[in-house]
Length: 404
Image (cartoon, rainbow, N blue to C red; front, side, top):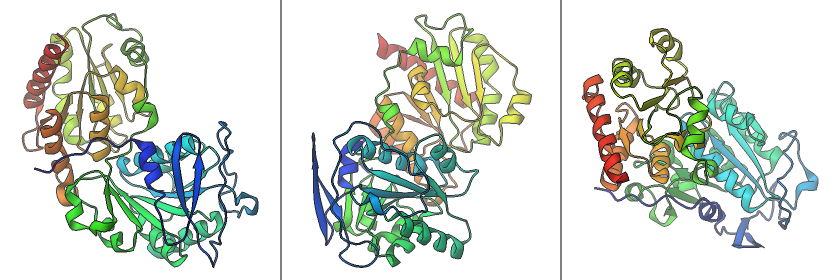
């Protein structure tokens, strides 16, 4: 069984993203080791000195990321490309947040699939500029090359998803160095393809190293969003955000179950929960359920679910820091970033891996979590309302024993 690494300290990973390249400059700032900034001696990415402001104020967002900024030469600029699964998107935004916290004068640009997409919505709710990469491969390549040339980043960080491949190829032709951050226990096909061309490959697990150029690999775990890692909200206050009228909110003994089906939701998990939630809430008077159905299944589930004051039904959860603060036990798919967030928050978990993912990496993630933190694993073949109810009650029983 492959060993899992502890979740990486995001500031460390953000610094490691700035490893030495053939031509580099060193930047030091208070409280953090010197950073190595890649530059080019010729061509569009000309040599420049990067000086870091000591101001604690956040940087002003780039109003038009497609316009060159000749007065920006003293600012570190980093482009992030991500898309598709939530793990790819949240990893990129976690790195960008840590980079901005460490280097307040830095600028970040996000490239991803056009709206409606998770990365476009995430960028809209943040201060980061976002530019769309069309799904058609020739157009995607041209659009990526145009946006990179205009923004003039010092390097590109690719965390996965459909836009990553054409953007990395565009970066190569522009002589722009790029690094890869792969979140899963098995490397994605795009990671294997781009690995020989990348400057560095940052991995969450040890297992993929044997399939990639070893000299380029560094195992640091997955980045976790600062809001989740640093959340100090008490459970009672967090519960009140979801169950303002429930009588037991804030009282000792309340049990909160969180059901996550991934970014797009899971019909299999939704059906299993649909067939057991009401009986569970009826028999367990102190139990609450936060249920993320996914946007595609929400309307159907909402029409079938009987309203209950201890049930919170939603298509998507954005404030995951508050959600984890309110939660005692998690039922989830086994996406890599979800597993890392569960590990960081220390929540007992029941993982139901999606078997149709390329290389079945969710199953690998789930059994690593079982070895490391005792997570329960239910395969899709075993999943039904009875098996889910039994496992949830078992985990809550163990959770109570650990509180004693």
